[in-house]
Amino acid sequence: MVDPFTNAGITPAARVATPVEQAIAAAANRTGVDFGYLLAQAQIESAMDPEAEARTSTASGLFQFIEQTWLDTLYRHGSAHGYGTYADAIGMRGGRAFVRDPAMRETIMDLRFDPQASSIMAGALASDNRAALLPVLGREPDASELYLAHFLGQGGATRFLRSLQSSPDARADSILPAAARANRPIFYERDGSARTVAEVAQFLRNKVETAMQNAAPGELPDFLQIAAATDAQGYAGGTPPPFTGFGMPGQPLAATATTRPSMAETLSASFGLADGSSALSPRAAGHVRHAYAQLRVFGL
Image (cartoon, rainbow, N blue to C red; front, side):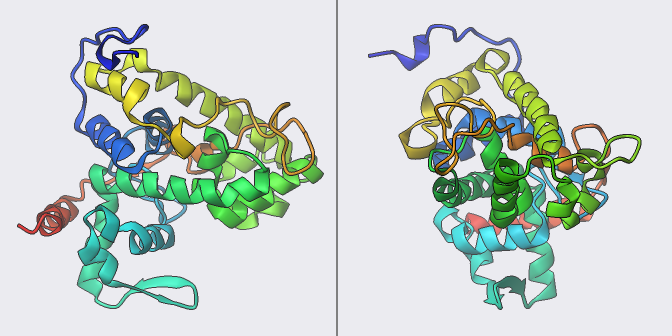
């Protein structure tokens, strides 16, 4: 039996874990989602900035939740993770989540800027996305495919994956026009020409590979290295499959084995945050609101 405190390849790190890294590690352990995946996702989407805000959508916070995805995820998983007060304030009408009270809605939206709440909901959503992609892929989704589902939503990710298999040379903006409008650096070249589905997948693949390398245990403080190596058991009792791209050999997509680029990058790049295009705000009032929100979560 391997002693987690003397794992081969786990070397001491000099720096101290940041509060954001601690929040991600705690969320990985709480939700059973791989720590390295969550860390890479945060690096891609917000450059580890819990106050990041996208310029072209409502995406905000460490994991760049848009408003509807945040409300829906909190509605379904909030009670299980200590956020029942907020989950109970969310209603559903016609498949869309809403909050009647304007003040409560603002408080709930500000929770996206709380690293702890955002990380936990990102882990919970990743589990949902895994379940949704299993029948589409016919196998366990890898990190890039899980990230794609976070970025495009389950429906958008399904359309993208199927298009990648059936018509990889089609314009990606014709498959997902709304996502293309909000994420031009992902769907278009610098000269304005549209990327194909395969080109978008390849573009994102490079970003995901870089993020996963940056999330390697050797770069982390001591206790986070242990979390990455032992604590976060990931999906179905293990970490997500190694990043190999979409539908690589040995991982057939549905009934066809087609080499497909990675999905994780689609999500990361589409927000345009990793390249410094995010708009940051002091959000002093927001900090006060979700400080009180945190107290209410713990019944204080």
